[in-house]
Length: 305
Image 1 (cartoon, rainbow, N blue to C red):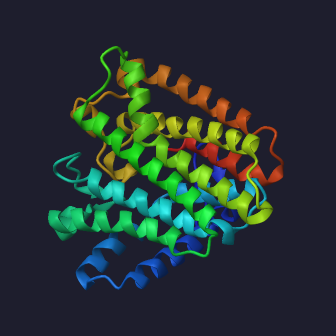
Image 2: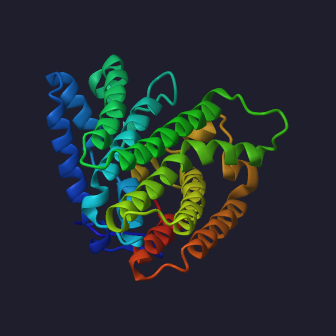
């Protein structure tokens, strides 16, 4: 497994090692669906194309932070990554962001036609819910996880609407609008990832929910979710297309609200530092098993792609 490096932060091989298990399990889940061959190929192109795998890592390490094991949260890790993959496929469509490059290769609608991209995205969303519903969770646990995934998915879609079609309340400042967009479009699924991991771990290992621990995991997730998107906004104006593996400056070109556009580059960096500190403080009472969450937080604050 390749170590992920930034100027100030490294994600160790031990921290990223579960990615291979997630990808193998996602492939098995897709195998079980017996999809038409062309849809199967498109779904795999979208879901198994690599990437940071941030959300499944957050599921897994949130689970470990509360005492759970990989077996308790692997279906949730796969499910959130499939929802993320679906969202990227649909975000890239001509009717929305109209992107032709994703992870250094053609977007799904460019490679497989727009019609197939729409249907493959739809399939990924439904397969994600099947991944949890088909697992051997107790019905009550499955219900909690499905509710978290559904909430994160709906809020993510609402954020995409705010970002592309508007619909804001009339009395919001530009910064408040940004927080509403990013807290939903990016933050909601990151929050669902952390909460699903924690819920899986608590119920799998301890058979009870600890509301105080879950609240701290949620506070951590809210902070890194917004921080992720502020950094994304910075990268969009500071990095090249070749470095990012996707089109740079696209938000500025589309006239979208961005943190550098509203607060400037230095103001945006100050927000990143504030959110990093908030996230780390939220999980400060946790023991050594939460160290991977701290590493992920620091990495997200300093990443360059």
